Length: 596
Image 1: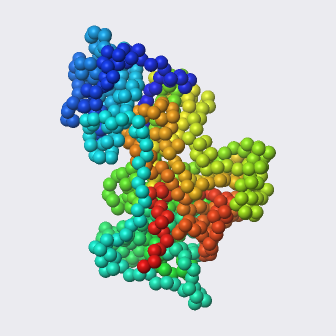
Image 2 (image 1 turned 120 degrees about the vertical axis):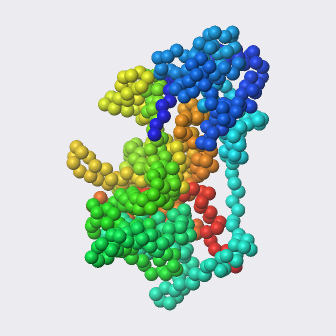
Image 3 (image 1 turned 135 degrees about the vertical axis):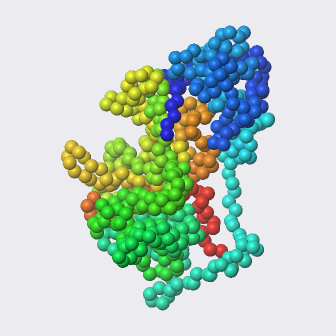
């Protein structure tokens, strides 16, 4: 999926204002686009268009074409004409402006609601018209309207709408339903018969089955991912029903087989069923360590190349596991859906987002845009800026954390921050001469700039830090032990495509083909950290540990051992994977049980 954007900006300079637009504003008074505001319509995806009637199909008045080129309506006489910068055919919009008296040069794109100068043959910007378009889009997204009839003041149009937190309390009907259909969890006792501390429900150790700390660390994070936890604990994927459905669909194969061993083997391939069984066991109230042997066996069948008792990479396991859940549940739904839309399976509904990649020609400004779905973001650590420049900040940071064991010799090579890694990820990058971009406007390969951004945020953002690197020159691999600072609260707004486009092109957000409104991202750009997967040791001999944030307290999950830790220990840990959940889904006030 890609869309092509042509912005005539050379060397980052903003072109001069259009004289024809200035003359039009002088002729038509203080509100020259009042008539156009009555025709603003907002499509289902949030894009604004110009239509006198919602069912109207505009056509060029000269050639009768409706879809081949861009269509522009003259703001003075409402005549619709076509124009295409790539087509060799003449521009009827420009011909209309030449044939008419002065004042007919300004037109509006009927499908994008963008002003266009037929004489200059380029897009133009007007503050009042832009404000009217933004108000129309905001009204449609919040109230469900498709048009706008009045224009409120344009100031503070993009101010965030905040919703005050209100703790949930059941009404009488919900209290009856909970009483009839649920049973209270009993308080458990430890091995010595004493009551265990007031630990959160679901906090249970996982036995190491032989170099499986990589699996246990990721499973602990997934077991306490709020949207994933709510999905399985609300019985949205019932393993018994799933197995019965598989038995019915494979009845003919089982009857033809001499025994049922193969069919029973195939039933274990549903990783979602094994996750459902694991959620039931972990949240049963039993505090004894749980052995995820069945899940390990099912994962081995899905990822045969990783089926061994050797230490594996936790990030590779995370991707492989989500792929296994998606493969099984995607087949059950019997319909093709892109993982980017977040509706194909629970794995992608929780973790899937969309990345945007812009490649801009440095000669003419032509920009090629592509969108790619992703379930995590892999980040490079910031390059080392020198020991002397970083030594002071490193010492001061670790001294305030109170952790002396993390100040090893490997830490004196400088520190990085998660925000700095995200800044580097979304920073414009000049591609080398061996990666020249074929510009469709110049029709030759040109030097180009590439910039990544996030078009759609997932419910849960997983950041993978590239700590293992391979040198093709030395033919060896090594681990990067540089310390990484990561915040407990993270605002992703600066890294969204809407924010980056606004900083590049001004306050106006252009309605590109296929783009969705950015209001949803702006309202959910704040995230809270709830799990950190760490790696200690060397490349070939290391250990994975997970830190969980539950009931406003941090817990260290080291295979079968669960201990409560101070947040400074988490800050000083060597983060490998960080899991952030949208703040609207992370209610701190509702985590601690209220006394009845």
